Length: 98
Image (cartoon, rainbow, N blue to C red; front, side, top):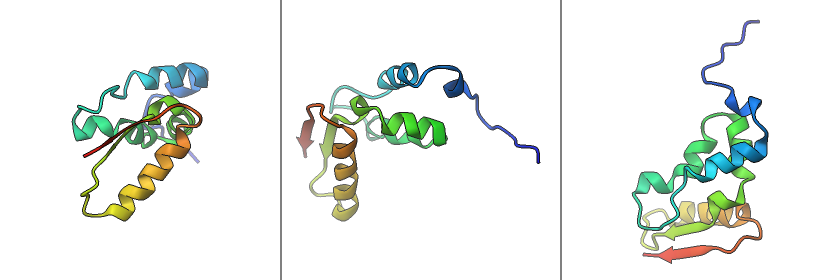
């Protein structure tokens, strides 16, 4: 069966450590960013299975948490926050509540 590749397999050409470092340049380092920018780790992980593996195992992508405590679906926000905390590993977190 012919398998069609829909994106550049660059992640297969470079070591995961290098891909991880590149991914860190894609996430904001400030809470004062747009909603879309705050989703950068999730967007990286949505590209493909290989990118998701790298993004999920890169703690630096998950160390800034911006939590809207008035979010209409607090259960979803709570679960996402738990996942971010788990993925941040042993790194210190910066948390902003608004």
